[in-house]
Image (cartoon, rainbow, N blue to C red; front, side, top):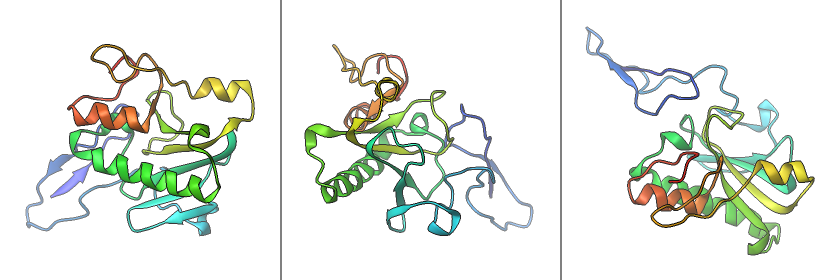
Length: 182
């Protein structure tokens, strides 16, 4: 089977499956050639600080804070909106990597912000976790990463940014991460 993906910011991780007459299979997913975060490497100009077979972490090219990195899965996933209950471990692993990197930089726990922008308020259609060691470099950067606590049954309030912990709790209960309370 060949998986064909749509490339808008609203798509999910679920491909349309097309059967080939000869029974041959191709790659289980196709990714947009224009995806800036597919195949991240030092050779492509990224300042890679950590990597393994599943994830890569690199310095943000427009840092919002004293330390600002991105962690991306090597697998193409469009955004946090494409994640489901089965992806809690993926987010947990990304958060663990984030804390490891910030530990190496001696960033105290109370000066860390780790999370995701929620579409359409993001710049690259590839899941990427922002890893920040505060302080922010300007007030406009502070406003770009608002964390709104949950209330009642909600893990987060109205916001275009979801912290890693909020994201995991939402996914664990089978919810979807979105701008509105979730």
